[in-house]
Length: 160
Image 1: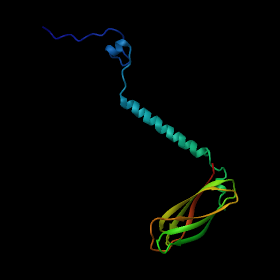
Image 2: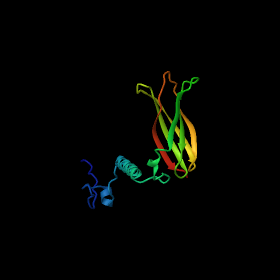
Image 3: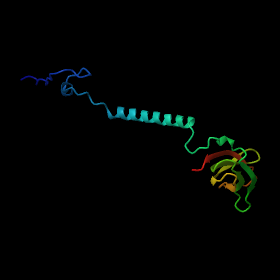
């Protein structure tokens, strides 16, 4: 007795030039799942980059188109370190000269030598036109030296 003959598949060749039951039935070979996963991840990454690019170019839906015109809206009225808690704080006065707005103000606390000790953020919502709001931005870490206060960012958006 001889070796058993390999089965023969009659029909056309598949796209890969192979003969077999899939090629004979006209079905393409399955691609690995990994290829589909890589393609999906690449497309997702491109979609995220496109959304970020559009967000940088187009203004947000609730953003004040004159948000850079807020320079006179925020005034630093006091900068101190609380004697009991040793936490630095900045007292800010916001005067809204526009339509009803929300404010996000960033303050940093550098030491006299320039070393940045910490930062704090203050959020004010629904400040009416012509209204003045006074609030304190306070740092959480305790300090053992005098500090100065510096407003590093003011972001104003139209109140919904």
